[in-house]
Image (tube, rainbow over all chains, first blue to last red; front, side, top):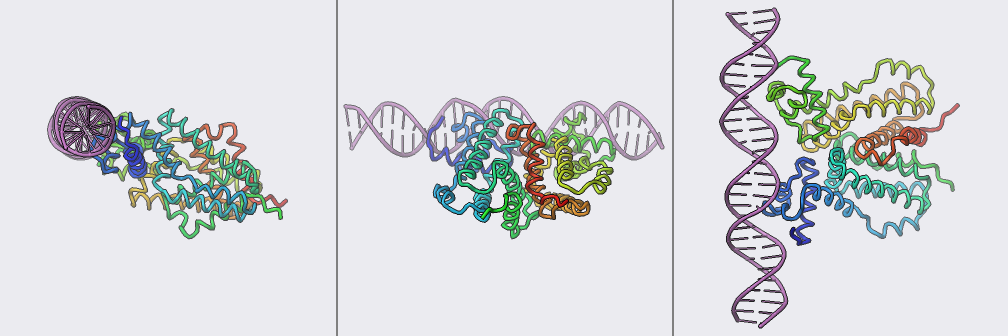
Length: 193
Length: 193
DNA sequence: TTGACACCACTCTAAGCGTAGTACTACGGT
DNA sequence: ACCGTAGTACTACGCTTAGAGTGGTGTCAA
């Protein structure tokens, strides 16, 4: 098992691209080698098996999505109204969409999870934690709405992203920002001035 | 090119199962043969190529989801309030979820559509038509809310279904009906008695 | 008898895995 | 300055699996 961390990271990033482009079943050691432009057999030397590769790829996507830490501070200090939530949601959708391979790779992992119980439990924990963190943050920042509000936002916006990335002509690009505002407007309770 | 329609349908249904179970890349003629329990080489004789098989599978899923026609009549005559919409949404989520292989196959097709422009345009049209039909029906039935209402419902409930089918432990089964009611309650305007 | 289909068997090709063997590089010890 | 060693990079090979497509033969019914 080789240790070179730069190479390891490059291989994991390559795995994400392959997952998004070729699907879970196309994720082979060889394909990762080619994508990372390293000689055949290299990935075999860095990962014990496919599961290893899959879970590391999933973790890496979340790493690369971490927002700038200043975001948290800004939000806690900002206003607690719908307009601010809309801005936040736009930022989030934009941030996730900006790494399309990562999002598509996660969807592939979800589908693969229907076949691999271990992957399913890892993914379930990660996604549940993420949702809970969002709920916690929303409440801590004293934004309008409760846990259910955040859950409904989570569902609608996730589907919006999936739709944009797979069938972009269903919701025209120009309409997306308005759609996000619509979602927030419908789901959040009115501001109490 | 063989014509036997019963066999052809059996092969398409088998293709849906294979898509859901093995992913788009696992959809091979041989896998379909095995799933449909017909001799090797049969699918080769019934479909010109993989694209042919993919688009026919997509169409078949929608066919199998068609609600009983009496549903439409019932809805047009029923009350026009949130409670009724909730019941309708539960029926719809239940109907789609009851054919999990179909739903997962469609998600696989979405991902495959990122690679195949032709499949993308076929799918885009079908899904856009379906959404428009839902919007039209909602308005025709004089349910509370407008086109945006239906769109937001569409997004949130689709993600709910995807979540249920891929990572069922994120939202416990027992919570689903309540969650649907929550979604409707937040997204629809209040009843005007 | 003929035509359409079912079934079976076969060849050809491609892809991938794992690893053995060799080459390179850097570093510490002397 | 030299050498040995450890860790890694690269290459190549054997082995296995999977699938595509097709030709030939059997079967049934009009």
